Length: 62
Figure 1 (spheres, one colour):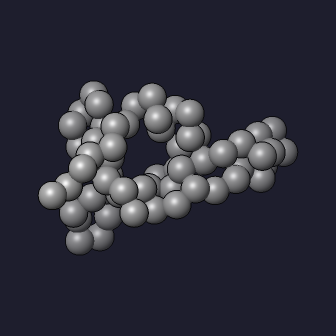
Figure 2: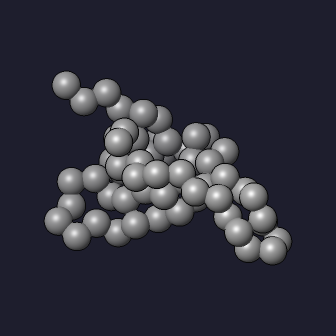
Figure 3: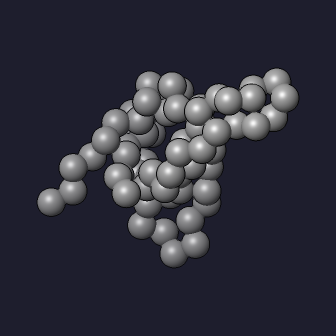
């Protein structure tokens, strides 16, 4: 799993997986499933992959 930083807020998130939106209006749309990084009970989110890649940058942890 990869860690990403939100470009605007600087908050860190863990990319859990990718999924396909299966609602009628957006059928087949690629989505990213991710959560807050480093939290005990992290909030989980879903976002369209193109928007995710615009607003987040991958972080290399050493």
